[in-house]
Amino acid sequence: MASLTTSLSWRSSVGLPNFGANFEETANFSYGRTALVVVAQKKATKSRKIILKEDVPELGKKGQLIDVKAGYYRNYLFPMGKAQIVTPVLLKEMRIEEERIEAEKKRVMEEAQQLALIFETVGAFKVKRKGGKGKQIFGTVTAQDLVDIIKAQLQRDIDKRIVVLPEIRETGEYVAELKLHPEVTARVRVNVFAN
Image 1: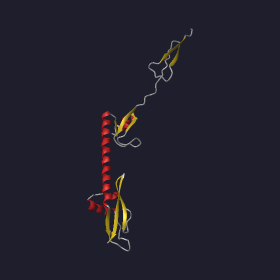
Image 2: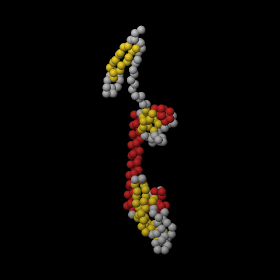
Image 3: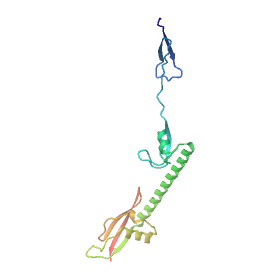
Image 4: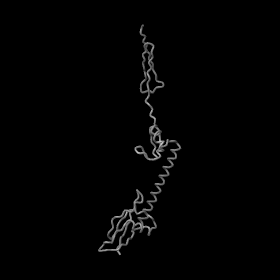
């Protein structure tokens, strides 16, 4: 029995990605068997664009737009209600919400700046304490004392936790800071007198 060997070659540029060269594959057929050479493309990564509904450790913060693997979204984030697939409507709502939040932040900051301007133009707040020897006073002037004086003079309620006051144990002029906003601080003069 004679051995039959046939050589077959082909060129293909249709249906396969071109990586800078034409594919030329050769298959040898012997004894009536056929061999087929298959060129596979890189496996497609399956990922989803999602928006987080709440903070997820090691992943992101609420409202953040991220890409995650499809299985992670399907098996963990979606059932737990932590994420949502991105849609054009959702993106539009997200943009509107971000604009609203930015406008609110800007309004709060402008309010704080106006309040700081009012506090700084008032002048000095006067505090009277019972005096001791020389410049000494009995007790100290506290943040609550300053809050009460501001409320009496300006009819403005402020929280005593935003008042940063140096330790005052003597008569004289001091400077207190009011942290109205993380970016806005008002400096207020405090004059302490002894009775």
